[in-house]
Length: 544
Image (cartoon, rainbow, N blue to C red; front, side, top):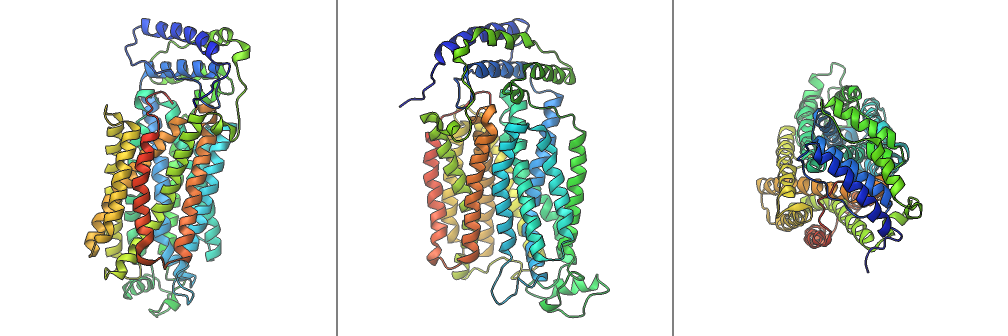
C-alpha cells in the first residue's frame, strides 16, 4: 500500500512549474548554492504549502548561514545547555534535600525518587503541550517563556521549606525543561538553510556540556554545605563548621536547613545563571518563523522576515512576495486541501503512520531503558561484589569526580554523530542504526564489570553513545514532520518518550528486586532490536 495524495498530482505539477521558474530566477542572479530537494506533500500539508515551503527553503539556502543564523544557533544551544544543566541538578540535590526531609534514612527506605517522579510527570506533560501550543500560537513567545519558568522555579525551589513543595516545583521545572528542548529544536531547524540542518545534531554537545558544568558548579556547594549523606561524617562536620547556628551533632537526625544549605545554594546559583542567560536571549532579535507564517497563511510577513534577516546578514534575497501569489494563482482551488489536525495527521498515510510508529517506539525505548539500565546495573553489580557508587557509600569528591568523567565523555558523541549524518555512507538512518547497535552491545557487556573503575569505563562509553543516539533521533524526528504540524508531531513523540521515562522511574522506585539483572539484559537486547527499526526509516536529505 502506498501513500495516497488525493487531488494533489495536478496541483503539484502546476505549482512545480511556477516554482522552477522562481528558482531559476534565483540561480540566474548568480547563486551557486545547492538546490533544495523538493518533496511531495506530507501529512498536514497541501500542494500549495509544499511549493511555497520549497521556494522559501531555496531562498534561505541561497542566503546561506549568516550572522543571524549563527547567533540564533548559539542562543538556541544555550537552551539545551540549561535544560541539561537543570536535569542534572536534580541528581545533585536529591540526596541532601531528601535527607533534610527525613526521607533518605527513613525506615520505609529511600524515597528521594519522589522528586524524580514529579520531574518526569512535568517532562511528560510539557513535552506534549508546549509543541502543540507552538503550532497554534507561534514559536517566538515560548522561546523565552520556558527559560523564565526554569529560572524562577529554581529560585523558588531553593527556598522551599518542605519536601512536598519541592516536588511541586520539580513538576513545574520538568514542564518548562521539556518545552525548552523541543521548541528550541523546532526554531533552529526552521531558520537554518537545508545544508546546515545537521547543526541540530551537533548542538547535542551542549547537553553534555550542561551536565559537566552543573557537576562542577555543584561540587563545592555539596562538599562544603551538606550534612549526613556521606559514608563518613566528614560532610556533616564541614557543614557544621560553616554554620554558626548548626547543632553540634553528626547524626542524620540533626540535618536541617541550617546546616544543609548546599543544595539550596546550588539552585539559587543555577536560577541566577538561568535568568542572566534569559536576559541575553531576550536581547536577541528573534522573529517569528517564516514557515510558521506560511502555514497560517501570512505570506507577506514571511517574505518580509526573510528580507529583514538578509539585511541583518548584510546580504540580499531574490524572494519577492509575488512568487507566493503566483503559486496561489497557479494551483487549482480544488487541489488545496484544508489542513488536517489531531491524530489524523499521523495516520493519513501508510508511510507517515509507519515513520511515526517507529519514532514513537524508539523514544519509548529511550525513555524506559535510560532509567532502568543504570539503576538495575548498579544493583546487579552490587550482588557480584562491586561496591555501588552512591552519595551514601562514597565520599563527595569521589562521587563528583565520576559525574565529571561521565559528563565529559558525553560531549564528543553528538559531534561524531553530526559528522556521520553528513557523510555519503552515513546519513540519519544508518548513523542512528549504528549508534543504537553500539549502545545495545555496551548495555549487554557492562555487567561483566568487576570493579568500580571498570563500571566507570562502561558508563563513559554509554554516555558517549547515548548522547549521540539522542542527538540523531531528535534531528530525524524534527525533520520528518512538516512545519504546519511539526509541533503536534513532536508533542506526540515527546509524550510517549516522557510517559515511558515516568514508567521506568516508577518501576525503579517501587520494585528493586528484579532477579538476575533481567532489566539490564532487557535494556541491551531491546536496543539491538531497535537498530533494525532505524533501517526501515526513509533516509532524509531535504529541507525541513
